[in-house]
Image 1 (cartoon, rainbow, N blue to C red):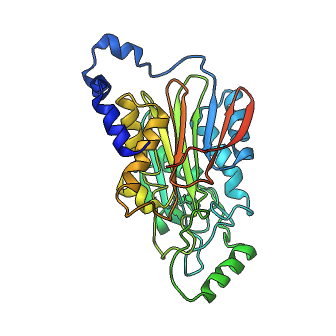
Image 2 (cartoon, rainbow, N blue to C red):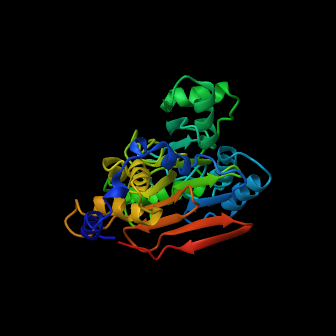
Image 3 (cartoon, rainbow, N blue to C red):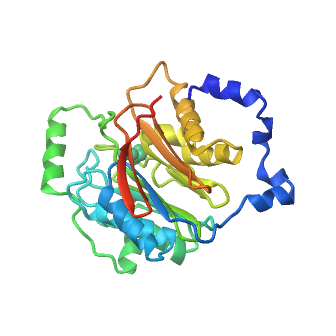
Length: 325
Ligand code: ASP
């Protein structure tokens, strides 16, 4: 949805949508259920992560909490060295070092994140440990790595031969620019709703390929790469993190849903906010997926080529999101 049509619609008799729940009557708030007992669990992820989605979905079907299921699901891709955008095998920074970012957020609004971590594969699990075992929300760099060692994580070489070769080829180009193009974005964002209707989410990435040392994108930033409000819904981002951070994209989507937009409308508006700041349609990609407490989902991207994966009722499908700005 273009921003103008969104604004037109906003002014055409939907002012009630803009009332925040905090000023709704208590009767209205009763309908705004926080937890739907006996809900159908589902998993919604960015990109084609069919196996990770299935692992999370099956965990939910067995009664796992939404957060445990999401962390288990993404762990599959973090360990998959064919995937050059998360975990071990992820593309390195421009100096040849793989640094990973991740965050988690649960239905209680608790969250944890790790930024620019070296030598640890399962950074989503580590982010969950930051949430559960420290008084903090974010641990970065050497501190996050040290915390991982204290928690018993193995140090690993995350740079595979394949990723090293690709980096060396990139070095030959001699221009120190990170690779920014529509294909170069595969962060895994995963939203899970468990049998009690509680929502949690995870975002895990190796970030932009050949980024500057120390660069951190949106993925581990709560509100940008991921946001959950268990009364409303959740959203997760992939793509050029700098642009997602500037618009606090995932938080924006959840707040738009709070005002009454569907997940689809909210994703479209969040993409419009990014695109309309550019001179014409930009060549970078950003995509969002979102869900609300009714189990409705939305997906939208700047460019085509984005897909998402949905597990529900034991059906697990990768779906091309043809919904493009
Ligand atoms: N959002 C990630 C980042 O900017 C990249 C991606 O989604 O691939 O670090």
